[in-house]
Image 1 (cartoon, rainbow, N blue to C red):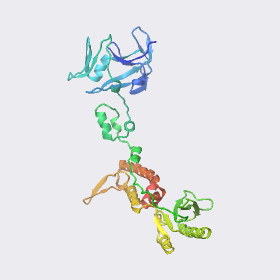
Image 2 (image 1 turned 135 degrees about the horizontal axis):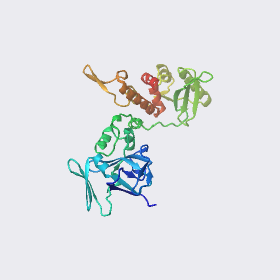
Image 3 (image 1 turned 45 degrees about the horizontal axis):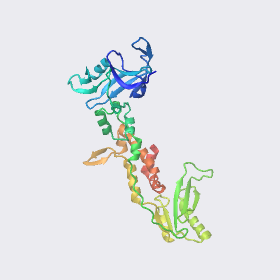
Image 4 (image 1 turned 90 degrees about the horizontal axis):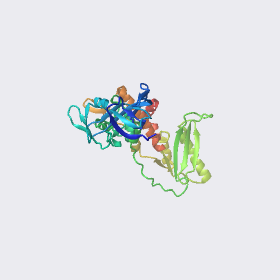
Amino acid sequence: MASHDQQWYMDTGATSHLLSHTGNLQTSFLNRNFHSVIVGHGSSIHVTHSGHIQILNPYRPLHLKNVLVTPNIIKNLVYVRKFTTDNKCSIDFDTYGFNVRDYHTRQTLLHCDNTGDLYHLHVAASAFVLLTNNHSLWHQCLGHPGDNVIQTLSSRGLVSYNKQYTQHLCRACQLGKQTKLPFQRSTSIVTSPFDIIHSDLWTSPVSSMSGYKYYVIFLYHYSHFLWVYPLHRKSDAQSKLLHFRAFVKTQFNYEIKAFQCDHGGEFDNNSLHELCATNGIQFRFSCPRQHGRMILESVENGPLIWPSIEENGVTRTKKYSELPATESIQADYDIKATNIILQGLPLEVYALVSNHKVSKELWERI
């Protein structure tokens, strides 16, 4: 059997557009209406699919609608009558080829030179535009551009999609367009064990068999050796620090010179500050409070810009309770994205946010 010809040939005697395979279809459907077509010598060939094709040109796209796919056809045929009707155009054939002209303006939309026995379309492969009804899919395939970019491409006939479903929320864009303030490289240098002790407290989602729900860790900077102590209550962290300090003094004959932690309430309180000052222990925080404050503001106001409202001559960001249904859905996604971003931060930064009352309220909805 002869190999399939990839060109399209104009046929004034055909009653349908015919294609040998589905690879050139931009939208394809399993055929349910036409089971076969009858060719010139009277035999029938099986139809497997139907679909549509759009051909680009500098003036306006041309359409091949309801193309029938039959693997047994050798040459792809353009049903001339349907082509002119669907595209509101006329075709002028002559010895040298043919011209496709706009029916009303007579402007030449496509010119094809032919030297052989048949008239075929000279269309570059890049002129066939892909069609999809999914606006979100175009957004992902084109590298996550803004809606205005896709609308511009659509207006130029380069892409096609269902305009009724243009509202979408891209999770990847929300995550990818977030920014995180950089942390400065640490300049802490220690020369002996227990010069700096790092500490943090973890809350378990379930209590242990012995009733422990919290765990405090002490890591000394010199060798990163770690001690973990279970706690019944967060408030026990300070007494456990005293026990640990006594343990270090007795077993290793060292004094703790600096204690570093986050801004959690179990550490950042007057009692622990006074304890460290009394015993000559330097009290340090893992990150600047301003850094955490900017993160908290992003949680309170949303990682993206929420709609604003003017009140008493002052423009402010709307509160969540003031958002209409559609905007509150957007806000929910923003909050989820914020939580994902925050969980990717260092533990000491996330601990600050996770202990903030606004973040806790948002967590209940997440």
